[in-house]
Length: 393
Image (cartoon, rainbow, N blue to C red; front, side, top):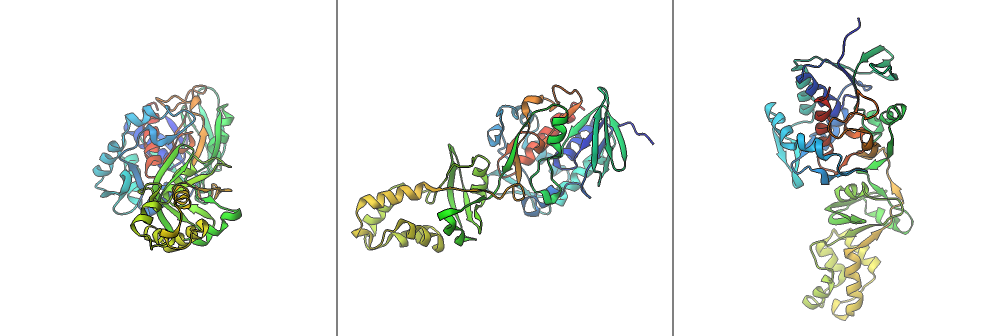
């Protein structure tokens, strides 16, 4: 039986489900095609299973894109407080963690259930089909025809909401980019973002600190984040490192300030106040012992501080404030939380997310070259871009 759909949405993740729900509110009949066996898989694992569903401070400055202005329109028209109101309407308890991050008190499953309830609320009808592997997408100028192993589906509007290739074990792929290129849309080179960095060469010794974490300020270029860094058996991770990884370019150093709350010349102050102390003891006072010992060995300043000249202490302070690491790569899409790059924003309307060259074709969420910081920003982009597209379906 041929059903008349107003729109077909490819992808049953955060952006796809929310777009379907918002379109249904406007009376549209929508078909969601998901290749995995269930919808919302990435939502379910997010935030340690509690879903960091937005960030109270989300704004354009928290996103990377070849066009940093593109996200302004959608983000201003669907804000974090709008999504919070929806969460509260469904009686989902939530709490705020550090830096404005909002999480469910219970389970991420509540967010998926909420989206499904919104899809069912109508007045339009949302049909969700899982285990659908798209083999072909055709367009005759008026209608899009999507073919899967179970048949063909036709609608005048098509939404690409299949995300990026990060976390392939969850079913992620580069399908969005292949489809975009089929329709002549440019794609900004995708790369892993919010991803651990790997160390090699002489810096391998830091991998012996696997499991050790410390609050630091990590930076690359002009971008810096103050959060925890974690040493791993492959290199560097933790929130501060994941954040800078989105901005890091191969060959560039990553600098870490191990004492962001102290002045650069703090070892000189320590020498005056505790001349019989050692630099190793001072480092242990502010950092985990294993990390302090590795840094002390690298700095090679022995003996009582009172017997050490000012110059090497000043140099040690400066190095500790800007310790250079030289990552030899990242852990790739397998461990990346999101993908940077994607369908070029130059190809899309910032008001509706519609492709300028292909009327009726839309792209939303992670498939687009808009990438948020760690901490709920990528979910907020999913909601905002989905909402923008839904108003045009």
